[in-house]
Amino acid sequence: MSSSPAVLSPRGSRLALLVVGLCWLAVLFDGLDMFIYGSVLPRMLEEKALGMTSGQAGDLGSYATFGMLVGALAAGTVADRIGRKKLMVSCVALFSLASGLCAVASSVAVFGLGRTLAGVGLGGLLPTAISMVSDYAPRTRAALTIGLLMTAHHTGGILSAYVALWIVEPLGWRAAFWVCVAPLLFVPVLAKWLPESLSFLVARGRTDEARELAARYDVELPAAATGKPAAGARWNSLLGLFRGGEWVQTLLYWLASFGGLLLVYGVATWLPTLMRGEGYELGSALTFVVLFNLGGIVGMLVAGRASDRFGAPRISSIWFALTAGGVFLLSVHMPLALTFVVVFLTGVFLNSAQTMVYATVSIGSAPANRATAVGWTSGMGRFGAVFGPWLGGQLLAAGKGDWGFTAFALAGFSSMVFIGVAALRTAKRSGTGSPDRKLVGAH
Image 1 (cartoon, rainbow, N blue to C red):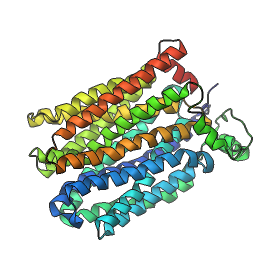
Image 2 (image 1 turned 45 degrees about the vertical axis):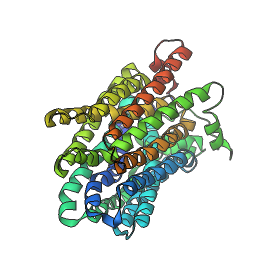
Image 3 (image 1 turned 120 degrees about the vertical axis):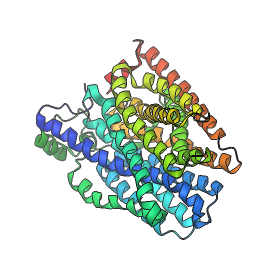
Image 4 (image 1 turned 30 degrees about the vertical axis):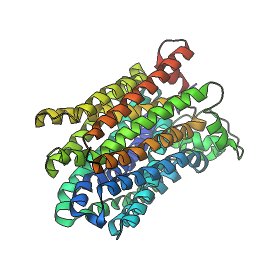
């Protein structure tokens, strides 16, 4: 039986579009806030803003990702208890206000506090939005819908580059963080129009609200227990990831996520700076950010469609292998046009490889603990996200910036191995030889 609502009418399709559209805008702001630091970092280092050094810059990038670790780990449990809508609204408000703190910061310590708080909001939003759209996505288009959602993250990355180009030059780096306060205007829209997860409402015993929402859009209620869960139920969701033989699969997903997020956030933080170190001007270095995120948008759509057909873990493993090759090539001096092509293709594979790890976990999870499973996979991967910016800063401070690309490539290779082993285990346990068949059935 399907674990997500079956769409029975055009009005049901309208509900799915409403959820995906609002979540897409929220993730767009998430991407803008996430990438803005990397986009303005070359200028901050040039100006020695707040007395910042290269080593401190890497530390500050890690503060944000540490906050994301906390937010992601808490998100699943909190969302499964208070609801995904409330958590999403709170996360958008938090990272917007935290950007305001960065804009007025008078020291590295205050700026770091702002980035840490922003990270908590950013880390909590993404797995919650993925879980929300998974609830309403058509069964046969689940991975594609998640991929579509994640195009917003990279659209935000592109927007961050243009904010750096158009605003930082005349107004200074603080103005870029004031732009990131603007999503506060979106908070009332999200609070008014985003519906709560039907699976959450039914699981919490709020059946009247669920029936009213289902009736309004002519969708079917998900099959789930209608009783209110016990106080320890949220911990049962986490323990369920380790029962029986599931602990091996869970650890493989966590390790794949660690390497993937080390790669994603290491490159996102240091790409413009490393490219400037190779002799490119700021405008050219920011062009790499645009191409990288354009590749991410294309990659999300291609990977999502391919994953719905061939299985998310299989596509993720192949994509990580291609990513490792592309990132390694960035350490090799090439003609500018060829470098543009490599950066674009690396963006295609890198960003969607990690997203398909989330898709694998989300599609294969039951509604009752989907947010917990995705949140903890994202959260454990955030250790890699913390380590990546720090590693890049340390290598740059030691005068070995070109080794950064090699280190990030090795992280991509390790994720290829872990998610590949997870795919083989899934195929063996399902007895079908096809990793995706079990996942689709579970959804």
